[in-house]
Image 1 (tube, rainbow, N blue to C red):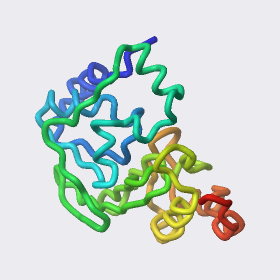
Image 2 (image 1 turned 30 degrees about the vertical axis):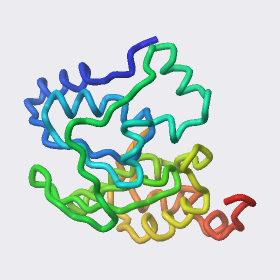
Image 3 (image 1 turned 180 degrees about the horizontal axis):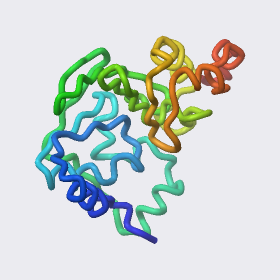
Amino acid sequence: MANPNLLSAIKTIIKKHNLKPVATLVTHGHLDHTFSVRPFANEYGVPTLIHSADRKLLADPFRALTPGGESQQIMASLGVTKFEEPEVVREVIDGESFQIAGFDIVVNHAPGHTAGSAIFTVNEEFLISGDVLFAGAIGRTDLPTGSPSAMRNSLISKILPLNDELIVLPGHGAQTTIGRERINNPYLQNDFLQSKPERGE
């Protein structure tokens, strides 16, 4: 099995395009999004930005995984049982805005996939949606700290008000636009958004 640490591959891209990393934006604390964050951030001496509700997952990602599930089994097979935060972590909060490398970034807390899932609007042109919104789908809500009812609320209050022209860069799969998803994504339609929460939500 290949090592999930992507630092080497990222360094190759950085070198090829002569880039200078200045920060790491983390949309949520799931292991497939955070495994390489510490080595990357420490290698380049850049801060890691994550919503306060998911910060604990940087040091203990198993808190948001099914106990004994596939991810934990993969980590065990690799001999990985312990995680640590990057050296510099900065918590972000809902509605916060800041500049990074000349980009205007706005944070929106959008829980549902995890308690601390966040989406980032960049220059009012792009949306880094993490696992909140995909092309034609949304992120799962059945893992620890996930919530179907919170996801519905996030879709209604954080995704639907966005401009149709916004280009969506999701955590998995192809890019899309808010306008395209507003029409085609079944999870942005009224019959889903207004459906009764299931018991236990």
